[in-house]
Image (cartoon, rainbow, N blue to C red):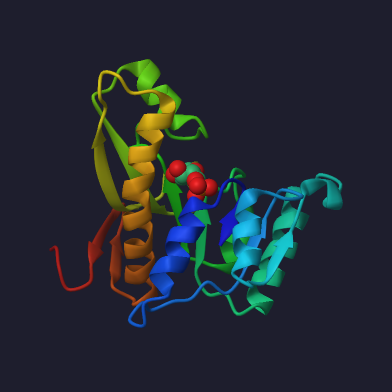
Length: 202
Ligand code: GRF
């Protein structure tokens, strides 16, 4: 997993993977930050962790992502989950895990794509419904890969960013492990922009 923030989704995934029938384990956790609370969550779970700040690579983001990819592969990672990772992946990482990268975004994409402030922007815009999205990460455009799952969260009149984000998080903690499990089990079929459960759809 890649994290940059608080790591509440990492925690939810760790809880999910504790179930014996979950088809994946968290093998390693990397961050672009020198440190972040999500890294502390990973360390507390005795997971291999590593920090890859761009400054270590003189700002060369492809060199950074090549190092991230090499380390993840050396740790046996075969599926990459981005949980609050606040950097755009460059080609070395995208190409190390083709069709095997999932991102979580706290809006109903394609609304409020490309921002780490999607909840604030949803409130500013006055939408009545927002939520969260898990999508495959490809090279096309930011937050634009094929959508795997979404959950809707109604906006209440008295919502603040904090209260709305809390309810979105509660959906994310369910949704992301379910999407990871489907990809890990090989139960996703991608046709263009549409993602189906294998054996379902057209
Ligand atoms: C999540 O709301 C996710 O949708 C967004 O960043 C947030 C990460 O939260 N991309 P956490 O670090 O997992 O608590």
